[in-house]
Length: 189
Image (cartoon, rainbow, N blue to C red; front, side, top):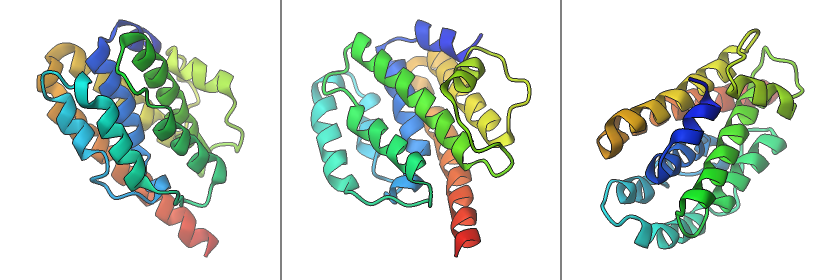
């Protein structure tokens, strides 16, 4: 099943976790602490998480600050937009739009930071990847696409019980992106 189909079938909590996971993997671009999103992850695991969703996002945004790193202004801007665009209320319609936008942004970020890939990161190539056309994909983008699919599959299969594994997948992706950002910074330094 394609990423677009998985997003289309995901429930509200699955969509919230999917968007959160995309942002979590991109934290190295924001110069943010790895634990920045931990309250949101913990909140998603609780019944009634929707009631605290907006409050938790405000806390996260205030702690995130304005710092950006990684040497690629467009990638940092995309990560900042994911953070800013999180809906105040986790209604299915709003979270679906946000999760979809986070998916696209995260794939574009990975394409922008891919050393072996051509510099352009047009929306049509990202859309094609999300729809399942993966020929000629760069390794970094391919890995991010796989992570996004795994996250949605885990949540569809296990619900709240899959959140721990989703967090592990996200943490792995954050480590990979941190290494890419660090390598790029050394190359420019």
